[in-house]
Length: 442
Ligand code: C2E
Ligand code: MG
Ligand code: MG
Image (cartoon, rainbow, N blue to C red; front, side, top):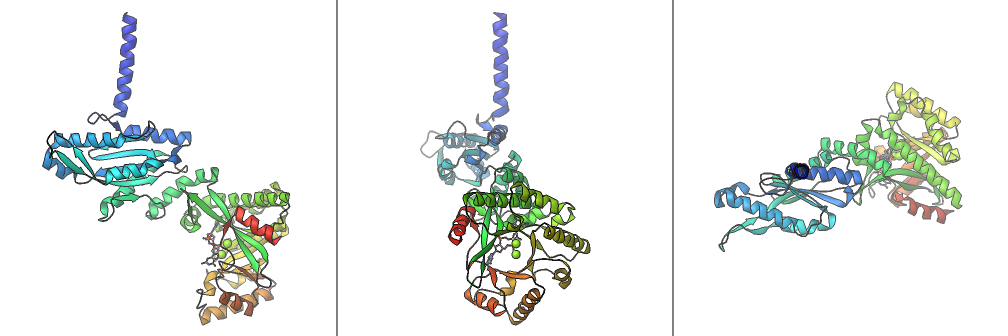
């Protein structure tokens, strides 16, 4: 009997400990520890991307305390939490954080229902007909993605979104948007999410065709990164500069090269004739003394003929980088891999760069073309003309980026530049779409 009693008692204690660890004694609802625990569990399970996290705060709760008294306020809080819980499933979470703040982890499909309840609700706290509190809550909302790696990330995101809602006069709800978040936060977000994005292949490779201005045929493509997040495309401008502050950009560039090689290999296997694809390599690679071998290793691993790959590098003004650039471009050329100077004319273009480094292709930056209609001003026009003729004389090929109109095409032809890349022909497109373009061209 005693043994049975002790076992029961121990189980009760265990149950109590578990209960108090995960419940708020005042409202008997779950607490923040439970919210964090569930976030972690769903991250581990790989299902976190199906949820939305919400941090909400009841508006004017202090005033309500004065108006109806603290004990009635406690009732309001409990009833509101009960009501929020109604209609939710077992894996979803409603927890009280502290005071008038609570956190929810709900299925994306329940977002509308919950926000409707938070918008404004009449909560009964007593028996008299007038015992009704008009309650609404401000909320920070974060639609989670599989890229989320820890609950810190979630807490930081919903807190910052809630702060936006609180400080806005018009907004009751604010969605966390890593693109709109302030710089420091954005950096943290993308850095945290990057590794997972590579593993999950959330970063997709888009291809932008390059065309001949002589017969408008397809002559190549540039591979450009697109980060898919919550069904939206994050453009490279949002994350490349952040990755470029560290050497993580190098991982991205090799990831892109690998995907490009894999695609070319699969086209060859299917009998689709590939074109040369260029891959952007950041300046950050210049300190890698083994870069040429690393690039060749990837290309060879996929048995891709070297001439199908082009490496795009940007200009440099730093002497040490200049020497490295020269070594790399020579090394690549020996391996039958061509290099191009990207965004020529953007930085402090030095003539010695194209004189001393055997680039095959010069990519004229889109700023040289001016806007769609007006075209470039006289200075730019004159510079472009000379850059093209110099490149031609040095035996380099010239391609113009950002070609958006027939006026641009006209101008390029007049200046003897016969290769172009731009929205007039194609935007960067997903692999499947590019495959169709290749098939039609072939
Ligand atoms: P970029 O290498 O100069 O790529 C060309 C950019 O011009 C692309 O921007 C492309 O979408 C854009 N563009 C093409 N045609 C037109 C046009 O007619 N008009 C205008 N206004 N723009 C046009 P995107 O894809 O946003 O990429 C921006 C930059 O991000 C790239 O400039 C490149 O420097 C960098 N980037 C993209 N993917 C990678 C990557 O995988 N690795 C590295 N290191 N950098 C990358
Ligand atoms: Mg480029
Ligand atoms: Mg460029």
